[in-house]
Length: 218
Image (tube, rainbow, N blue to C red):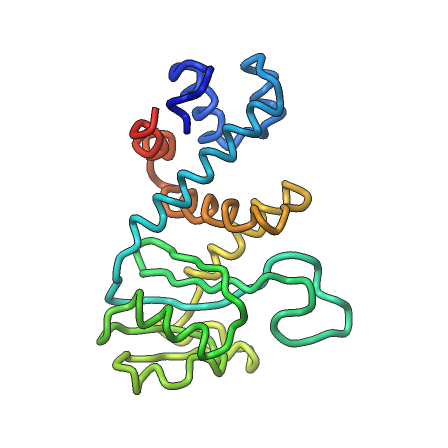
C-alpha cells in the first residue's frame, strides 16, 4: 500500500503527475531522479488503483448504447480471416453515447459470454447499436431496442445507427498500448482499464481524478 511507502506523499504525487501526463517511466525516472524500477512499481500501483476504481464505479447505464467486440495482441495471421485470430485477447466494450466506455476481457465473443454482460450493464428498454455479429441476436427478445450496421456489407452508418463511439475507443486503446512494445498477459487488464479511464476523462482533469483515487490510501 502507498501509505507504507518509504517515499513521501509529496514525491508520490510528483510521480503521479508524470503518470497522469502519460510520460514513460524512463523519462519520469530521469526527471525526478528516481530509480526506473521504483517508478515502474508506482506506475503499476496506480494502475491497480484504477482497476479497483473502475469496478467500484460500475453502474447500470441506459439510453443510447453502443456495443462492440475487438481483439488485442499479436498481429492477425495473413490469410486467416474471422474474429479472434490465434494469439489475440478478446475484449468486449460498451459505450453510452455522450457518456463513458466500459470494457471487459472475455473468454470469447459468443452470445453466452456477451449477453450476461449486456444484461448486467444496460437497463432494459435502452437502445443498443451494434454491428451484425451473431452474438447480438436476441437483444430485442431481452427487452432492448436493437439497431445494426452490417460492416460485412460495407455499411458503417445508417442515420443514428453506428458504433463509431466504441470504435474510437478501440483505436485510442490500440494506439496507446502499441507504444509499450508488448504487455505481459497478466498485466493486460491493468493497462486496458487505464486506457478506459484515460478515454473517459480525456476532456477532464485526469490528474485530479487520479489524486481522488490515491489520496484515500496515502
